[in-house]
Amino acid sequence: MTMPLFLLLLQGLWVTVQLTVLAAALATVFAFVAGLARTSTRRPVRILAGLYVEVFRATSALVLMFWLFFALPMLGWQLAPLWAGTLALALSYGAYGAEVVRAAVAAVPAGQTEAAVALNLTRWQRTRLVVLPQAVVEMLPSFSNLLIELLKGTSLASIVVIAELTFDANLVRLATGDSALVYATILVLYFAVAFLLTRVMRLLERRAKAAVGRGPAAPTAPDPAAPPAPTGGPLAGVAGALRRLAPAGARTGTAAGARTGTAAGARTGTATGARTATGARARAGEGSAA
Amino acid sequence: MSWDWDYTRAFLPDLLAGLWTAVQATALGSVLAFALGLVWALLLRSGSRWVTYPVHGAVEFVRNTPLLVQLFFLFYVLPSTGIAFSPLATGIIGLGLHYSTYTAEVYRAGIDAVPRGQWEAATALSLPRTRVWTSVVLPQAIRRVVPPLGNYILSMFKDTPMLSAITVLEMLKRAQEVGAESFRYLEPITVVGVLFVLVAYPTSLALRALERRVAGPVATAR
Image 1 (tube, rainbow over the protein chains, first blue to last red):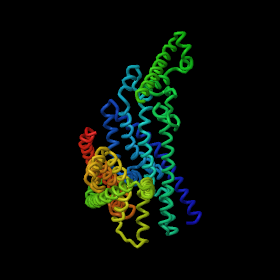
Image 2: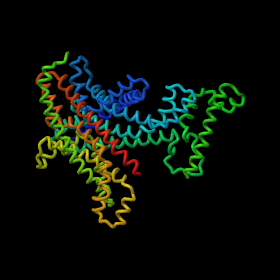
Image 3: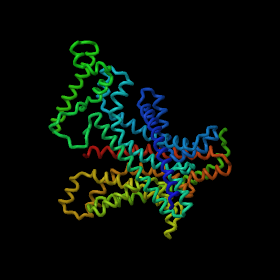
Image 4: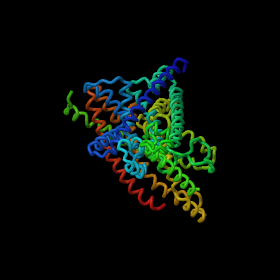
């Protein structure tokens, strides 16, 4: 393999990365929309989302790509190859992701939703501020698996003539005739990207866990003498939501507000109350655990 | 453009023949994957670093790289080593090898889920190592791994269209050929998708039912 041919492979790798990033972004959107739609109170919405998930999970990503590439133009829509590939991957892996989203939302303790209802948050506030931040932590490990699947799935795009890594490898193979070396090289390249993605996702997981107070903020062993993290405890999600809901002025002037007894102060009073209660509970929880 | 039913009726038998090829590839591929996966899982528990490190590395490598590229690798490299396989056999080997790295993980989890007391009891009875595995551990582990293994059969089936890339005449390849003859791709490729839903969706429902049935007693046994 000469240098220009290796550069051709790197060019293909770049397209593979682009495909992965674009498709992953779009798949995340599909996953959240369909996953949340499946928890909707409206039956038609649930059924529609369920239909999407089941159909696209049952068919193969490659068949879908072929359909978008060869069959859709006959119905009058022609997509640019890169977009057909992106859309096929996103629809397919979005359907898998929707199940992840649904399962994670279902795994958030019912008490969180009940507390949010009791605090009179609207349904949308409940989802956005209480349920999702906690559910996302649950989703991340599954999402990082799906991301690797998606990366591997981009190789399918070579069959519909998108010049990504596998496609360029076929070109190089034809040029050199050295199949073993060429395919071994790109297998290593795919593995390198997958390895990198796994590392990045693991970092994200750790950050997300720390953000909702589950798990250490730093990768050091937890110090039993250290005071508990203020965000920890079973009501962390709700307390966090309240903090985020409180107006900026109220948030900064907690003590002052409470002292003067303004409306804003009263509101932050609730938030602080929840926060301290949380802290106490977290401490109690740790005591019993230790 | 409207749907051409006469055309659909004409090529349907051809696609069904392709479906049969895909089912065969899935069946033989899963047998290979189940057998090899167990070998990897047992090797990974051997306790010797000289065995576990290379096996672990190889399994991770195969898991994290595309099946399609592995198929190409086998398809173009195997003949040059003097081993000649038909495209279908190459595809089955590729599917089996790729999925064995997933099933290895399933077996590992299944073996880990066998309660410690079972091992201790087997030790107390001073059963030989092979008997411990064949009579105590594996019978319990296999029961737990049936539903996840079933899921991998299903995803292997959904990966069979990749075999079209190495000239196996499964559904997608046949749809391509039908389409190339008549310049109408809409019907054959749509029918391939429909056939996939018709086979895969009921299978996944059956698997879910099986999972529920297996999960019940295991959960209470803890």
